[in-house]
Amino acid sequence: MTSPFIYCVVILAFIIQTATLVVIVRDKKRTNILIYCALLMASIDLWIVLLFAQSILHYYGAGNTVLHVLQNLKYLPICFCPIAVMKITYSIVNSGKPAKKLSILYIYPLLVQIVLWTDHYFGLFIRQYDYENTVYGPALYVHSAFAYFCLLASLFFLLYNRFVNDAVIKSQTAWLVAGVAIPTVVNGIYTLNILPVSPYATPTAFVITGFTFLFAIKHYDFLKTNPLVLRTVINQVSYFYLAIDAEMKIADFNTQAENYFPSHIFKRGENLKDLQKRHPMAFNFDEIFSSIEEAKRKGESITKEFCYVPTRQQGEKIIFSMNFTPIVQNSIYTACIITGQDITKNKETFSAMIEQERLAAAGQMITSVVQNLKVPVLRLTNCGDRMEEITQEYLAAMQKGDLSETEAKELILELKQNLLSQKTSISLINEVLNAISEQNQRIGEDKTAFFTIKELISRMEFLLNDKLNAERCSLKITLRLDEGTKVKGTLNNLVQVLVNIITNSVQAYNKKEGFVYLTLSESAGKQLLINIGDYAGGIAKEIQPKIFKQVINSKNGTGIGLYMAHATIMGNFQGKIWFSTKPGDGTEFFIEIPLCEA
Image (cartoon, rainbow, N blue to C red):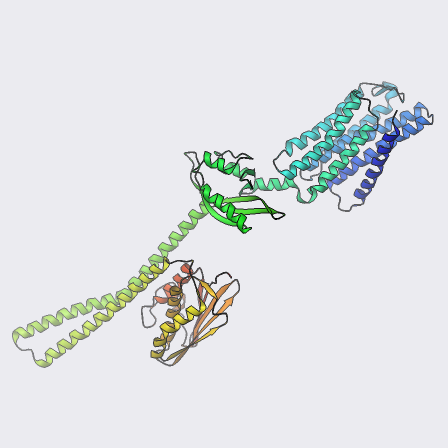
């Protein structure tokens, strides 16, 4: 006989579960899993109600016929409970997907009802009904087998599909497994009559199942974050993923890590230093350790490149871009997440592109230089030939003794003019070669250096003062940022670029009084914007497409300044240079280069 305490426990569980069921039903954002939970709870409630109805009617002396009817109806929720549990677990392991394939199982409760209501003909399920001593037929064993099949299949779904080393998923799975295991064990004890168990024990166990499912779903935020989906995403991404705990042990990794490093056989719980001992040449482990410490110290992600050398002889080295992200919880460092992407092909492609661009630029520059050297070289050749002719003519006249003083002076004057022409040509060749040499030297200079706007202006004014006075031009400098602002790069490089551009503007006035303006300001994205403009008539249309691309000699000088300016701004400052011109009016050059971070 069931004790009053058991009744109280069952009634309390019934009330709490019914209230929870009402909340689920009224929730407008019900998911498939919550609907299946509601089905489970409704079945349990009906089961408990029918049990209470049987107990009350039996207490008041109701006949076996009425009690038999309630017994048959009771098997309807009894059949539904294991089906609901199975649908819940199926949906959970499939990321909330509706368990439509399992809906065919709903035929089973109907078949059981048909068998129950025809038992007076066949006696398959209940051969003889008595409230306290019922004789069951062979169909009861089929029914029990079906119930255990559903519960054990649910356990299989959970253990097989969710057995991973993720703390959140493990905890959630533990609750779900407990929720299925409890009614399975209780029902087994009741069915096999191992212990004296109340008929209310099994439905009460299913009440616990419902609440453990809801707790696992809600507490671990399954419906919002879905750990399984996250795990699937982590395994699907092209990046490899490693979680290193505070003790330098491998806490977790994804499928890509196993694919990239098959010879290493990563083990969860293994210390990275042990991995270093087994495969010391695979990575620069010391650099990895220092990167983890740096990320921990800074409290932010850092990215570095590492070369991986497989231990297998047939393997080729791989270059990874690896990101180190520290995980801090409640101000305590707990782990470092390392993600890496194979950039070997990108590096090779990039290197090939750089090499192609370098060769193309070198070829274009050589072509332009050769074109610019043709004139002075031809002039040198002509001068040499003419000087040889003058020398022979002078010697022949001296031998004949008919060289007059006037003729001698003319020959000497012509010889002097050719010497001057040679000197000019040699000076032009020397200027071109010096410009190329200076550019090559600047390419190798320190790119981590910086200078201030004040230093830039002072150096330019010093170098341009005499040139501006000689050419009768003035330079107006306008600052729209603090003169203490720092610029990335080497001062001499930028000074040379600006001096070349300003010199071109000054020369464009052709000894006439002119005006050149220089404006320095800060543009978006922490960039220094430099504007250099003149009103010297602009650049001819046929020359404009060749600016920066070829060595153009449109003014006095070599014309190599702008070509080198473009290479310097792009290569040494990682910046941009462009121009705007209006023939007959003037030209303005724009330079944009990075400023130092504050």
